[in-house]
Length: 113
Ligand code: FES
Image (cartoon, rainbow, N blue to C red; front, side, top):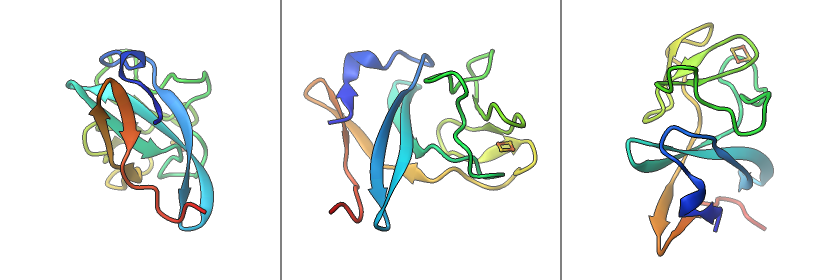
């Protein structure tokens, strides 16, 4: 389990967690957008820094896009594609999460040891 489903408010603060991917532990995050949990590796597609300077602050001020605090790349929360910024056309690495029995659960956890 990543967190209780109630911890994710529509277009509100995200929840950070860690995941094993290709044998490496990586930072990740999940937000709620259009009712669904959306999770990504917490690494900008421009430079692989974490998107949030303030922990959990992944949405822009309009709550329409995810935004990288470093250079302002903005991402479609549903697809992870960069729509504006230096990495336009690139994509955040998506993770498959579901809401089940009141919890947010990560389905893929490749390489966990
Ligand atoms: S590091 Fe994210 S926009 Fe440059």
